[in-house]
Length: 309
Image 1 (tube, rainbow, N blue to C red):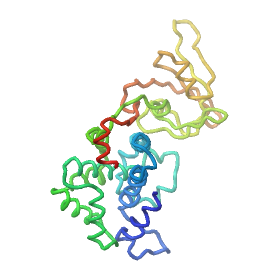
Image 2 (cartoon, helix red, strand yellow):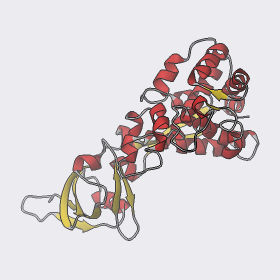
Image 3 (cartoon, one colour):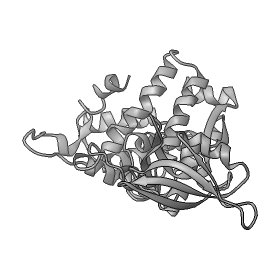
């Protein structure tokens, strides 16, 4: 459904910078959040409208997108417009620090589309469907600029959306997706995030426990863990003075949580460049901001139907 939608949105309606595409060099545009992001919004939405998936399945797919954006520290560093422009130099050159420095114009762009659609619907003047049709009419199904979107939003939405575009596209603040979804009939739940996310880590657990990425602002970063570390074990302070510290070998992250019990202080024992490193760690509270994950489910089916059907 994604590539099918591209036959209209990118192949015909396309960035003005791509009017005459030069295959001999890099072609930059700040609009990939629109052309890839809005396409990503519609790909699953059209599956729902076609009856190929139900409301619950659609909300499950949307849950995944929301959590991918929430769990990427780079969303507070790079705007989605910057991510679009930097696609040639950053998006396809993934490194250990990529989640800390960049945001995906696919996932966050799709949430920008969601927020615009639900805002238009809540205010009762139009929908994103109407905006897309009006853009096609305005541009003749050809090259467009962000200014064209702003003009169409003003015309159909009966007010300026410059503030939303500035905050959501050219800023790094959190998108109001959860609040808008709750008003549209979705039930928004906050669950405990996966353990790796709560610690601020991305790991591989094949034949051992290896740190792939350390996320900015997490407990792992504060403890001094680094990408490439092999997490060998954990050590806990002695319960009483004079006792020997309690140390355990670990091969999976869940083992650490199981061994920890109610203790909040531990030392991660890691191998780095042939050396054994001790990394004192304070375990994050379950209600810490990065310790939760969104889960969407059906709330008011009639409200959802007005949007999804």
